[in-house]
Image (tube, rainbow over all chains, first blue to last red; front, side):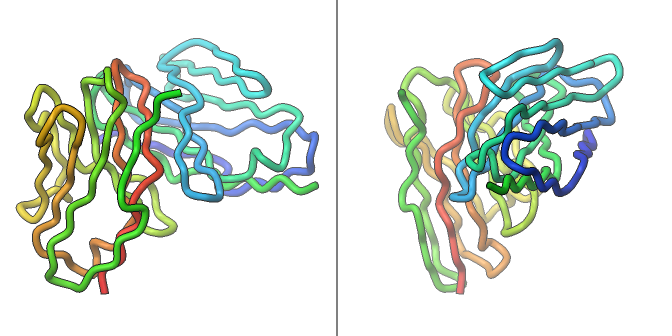
Length: 109
Length: 111
């Protein structure tokens, strides 16, 4: 199956800081999504982004499919951004998503 | 905003007992999934379901597991004889196209 590696594994930020999370994958994909797992365990879909760039408020994401990586940018971080950010990929649009191990983000006041 | 709902939020069971985890996917969605997450680990795919049949399943989804869509709204995961290693958070998900929407999960504890 497709291997998904996320970095860094852990990130501690001061409120207001910016950060970049990375997701590398081992094979071509037709489906890539970013999720935020909040401290209560809920998985929130942030982006469906198999290629290109998208923005949603303070979050944006870029996927360079030809180079097999995706980046998630958090700007002006807030304490509510804390949690685990997962990248998940699939080789086809409706296939099983393969999740990475996640990046644990802690935003301190 | 429509959401995927799961019940119960917590389930405690004895090893060897059967459990049924319930999900109501978003009403116009066509693809349904079960994933699980063992504490501190990554989210793992179990099974996908489309057009009233399983479309794909993982190695984890052995004969102890089954899924069913008994009516037009519910989607269930049954574990026939639970084992200690089945303890995990079980997530139901649905999608109308590619973007996946997860429920809030059922925390299953097998004692």
